[in-house]
Image (cartoon, rainbow, N blue to C red; front, side, top):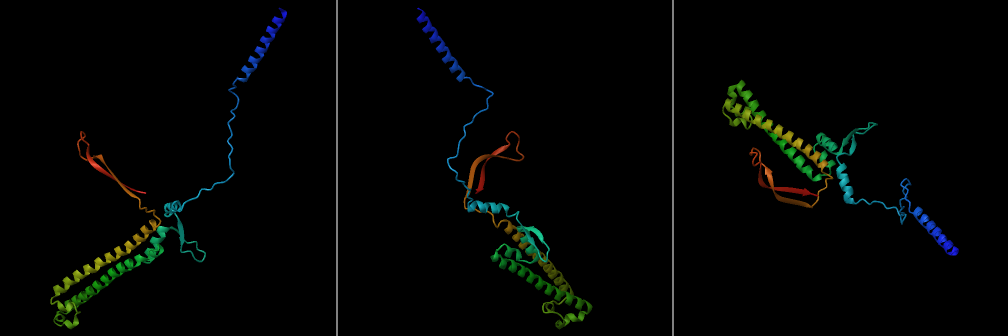
Length: 241
């Protein structure tokens, strides 16, 4: 009987020890710092990002208007800092066609010099005729007998037989001469604007992927009553990639 009690007490003691050790192993300490798993790289190879030519071209196009260059640098003078469009415009203002040469748009030179040469020729032509009629008018006004002798007048003025006719031609050809002054200014200004815009768009990314989308929509109508403020219409969207 004593042996049975002893075995039973020993079995209870062993069972309590096992349960105590298992409960202690399952205790969670919230104050303990976390122990994250460390993932080690399986290779020591250093990879370098390769930039494509298209990406470099887009980046250059975005920065083209911000890049600066120096102009009039000589004899220790650092020159003037100008952006590329500003430099192209200044060169075109100093010498017509120089901005196009700076932009490497050689094919535009005949257009620049042809337009300027044409309007300058027109101004010189009308200035010559105006001067002829003005001198003839002054001469006849001082001595009316000169009107009967065309040898004293110019080739064009000799065909007019009255003082009023000479005066009318003076006014007409003076107006032609003055309008060609305006044409010269326009041609000169347009070649400056062309050089400026061309320098801005020189590196502009132009893609062949043009897509046009349209879909029905409700468009706002100005002046329409609040009850029906919109009307059906078509919306177009042109996307340039």
